[in-house]
Image 1 (cartoon, helix red, strand yellow):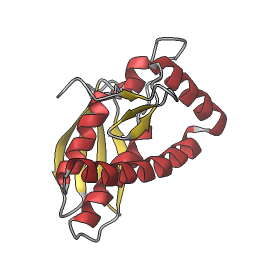
Image 2 (cartoon, rainbow, N blue to C red):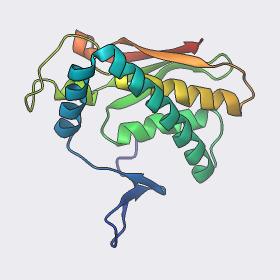
Image 3 (cartoon, rainbow, N blue to C red):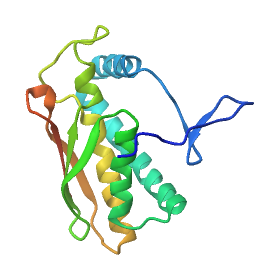
Length: 177
């Protein structure tokens, strides 16, 4: 994994960007505290669905943009997505398995930002799935791959194992609807 990403800062606007996409840079505890506050008010199920839908759209858009920027195709785009997520502090993402023809995948997440933040900065440790925010991202990326490789599936994704529950790492399972 390349530890450095190109970060461009516009001297006139202060906008940070990587590969032409505007970025935000915030401390992990700030993001997780805000995430948990919304989750507390809305309830995890409702909030998770909103994040799933927004994450799906964002991942699909990101794959489209990065494929053009880097000349990538098929699963190479999804692999690039996992690399970039890993380089941005969310955790270390890798495929356990992936099949572009069927739309099935399992993604491993080590050192999740949501798990690492527990017990710090007033964020309580909770022995339940904490990383559900990523689920829609992986369905969006897989559906982009499917559409661009001539497949007709639409997928769903869920966190099926979380390090916050005492496992060594988190697992997300992607499968056709």
